Length: 254
Image (cartoon, rainbow, N blue to C red; front, side, top):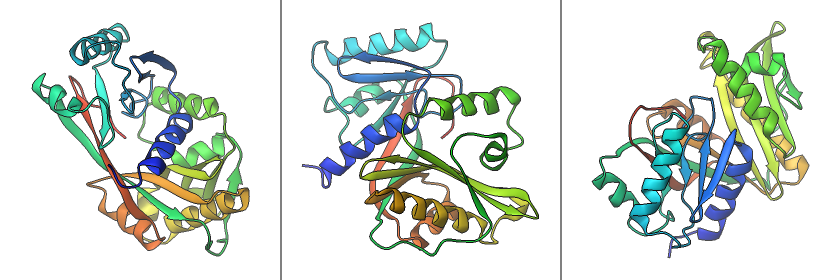
């Protein structure tokens, strides 16, 4: 049995709602997701359950056909609870490569940080919020796709924006989902890093989540993002479980 299995499943359900894909489908218990952003999270199979109505190999072929019709490479998001047993090895045997190794971190919200100054909360993806969480190097289509994804979220949410001289320099998103609060889209402008702005955004979102009544905050961080991992550890986040993607074809991000 996987440690903390119940909490992992709760977080995966919350993650499904916190990063909603433009297109979804059910296939033998798997959730197929696709959309216009460049993120793997929107363009992958969430394989947390498997009904067995199809043989695993047939289900994989059906998923590949669905993604091919969407003009995308098939991609699976996998963790220790992915089903059926042996799915990761089966995909590797079909030539899928492993990408995007990441960890989900969590912390209790029984003790909240002090509310930082110069951090504004926005209740939707306003132009001001998008300035903070969207990389200016992204093409216009990616910025629009991210804004559309944020607009699909059906849970209470808050964007936190740290400003300096009235200009946004860091931002992040928190989605409240009952006992859980998921953080995502954390970003600090390149010229403003290592100045405490990311921590101010993080603390403000934790305060908001705690006041909303969430008991646990969680977030995802890629294995090679050492600065972000250090920031989250300093804020009390601890590793809960790992995941990675298996991709057949071109890569995505996030």
